[in-house]
Length: 335
Image 1 (cartoon, helix red, strand yellow):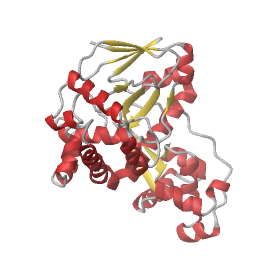
Image 2: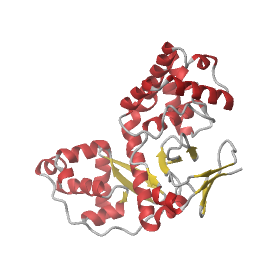
Image 3: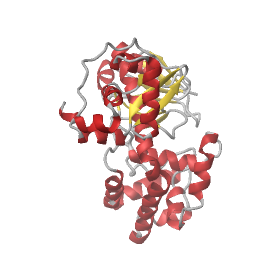
Image 4: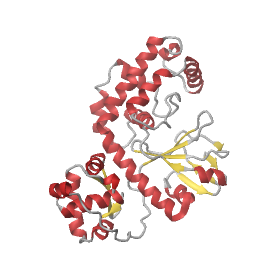
């Protein structure tokens, strides 16, 4: 059984990759991963730490996010912004939409007994919103800088694919284990075995990399641009373009050079200018030996200024939020 997404030329032109991690989408996927022990084993320690810390409200919110199935769409996964602000916006959800969502979920997969009273009882709604806040604080908030760095690294890789072969290259390489591009249709093998045809009709698609996703997921709500969620690149083969040409050296600020040293400052600047660069590319950019580039990257990683991911025989370096903040404090954004 296959989920088929039909693209027109207009859809291809409007398809894009999310600029950064989508907080509510990642929260929904983290909640599913918490309940599903079949998810990757490396999450077991995280599950043990978080599951025992949830209160009644947190478990209430968790019960509306099954391991496989539908979650309430008034928790709009497509929204981008500060997580706390997005969670606060949930409290403005109209009662009519809550009722529609509850009735739809009940017809699709069943709901907890208390959820049937949700549209009419404001106190119950507030408990749910408190539970969502708690899920965020417990499941994701401590890890959000790391999640953001990993997602940004994946986005950089996808942009390289796009630059090489356009959006069709992007669609064919994003998640080949579960997706197959047979122009003009993207075929997806879904976990729930659904067989469906989705015609984008000029809306295009938003590709959203996720740390907690293990397969490809589709969200198509209310006529908005559908979201295709896929796992960030881990052990998948990734396209690696030719090494970049050496850049004109960005002069390090005196303060940063005094803190890190001239060469290490140049390495950090190079990684910020070329996120997801390999160690070999980094050495070319800065004009140093690969062994030296590796040594400096190790120190920067230990200081929390860069994030490194391994892909086959290469390691790819991307600045962390802390690293970008440090550079911005030295005028990086004005260079």
